[in-house]
Image (cartoon, rainbow, N blue to C red; front, top):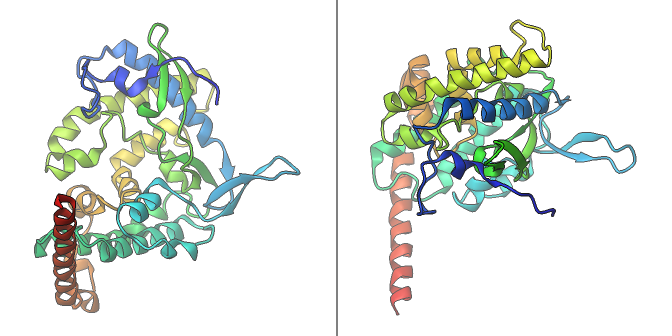
Length: 330
């Protein structure tokens, strides 16, 4: 790899600190003019990627003979990798996947592996029966919301190139000129539903929104995020104007506003965050649904067996963990 000069953009935008272990959060005193210049560059990157169209959802590779890129296999997203390596979801769950021809089919597959992850990770709900059941309901209700959020935006394509990990901590910047010098960590780039590219970036406060939602601080998140959201969309509008992109609903900036206003932003985030889908559902999407009232009698009848199984799993997990700690002490 070539050596690229520059500072990590995430650290550059965070408050000054000598403790590199601290979470990276946006400095509230960041100069707006400086942020505008940075946002315009990133808006340009996103706009450029959004123009790459494909007929199916999945992983891409280049044909050795023609040099053309094409969807050649199932997607491998950052979230899929995490639920296997961290969440205990069997990797075999994904081997049967193939490229998807419709966004609704992809979201249905997400809902299925969200449930598989919940079933597999022994400590996901701790020893709280109510939390375990709320996670079950959230995942089933997410599946019920797919027609409302995925059929209105290019369900049958074309689909767009999307990188799960495109964020400031994976960029370098020249601190003197404020020019971004490098983007890296593109290993989880796939062709995804077009609506993913229509979202305003989730990282505008640098930390993921789930950090606030886990602590029931949605109002705090919105108070901090919405001004940056508007600032980024204005930056996208300036980039579109410079490139003479026609005005109207098809502009990416207009689609970003629509995604936020319709709460599709939250649905899309939930679809990429199996560890946090319940928080996104209950705090951002539940107003669009009815919780348990959305589920049929057969699904609700699973409650007792499901809760008993999860409590048994966490007990087994704790026994193994205690055994490991005793072994470590020896």
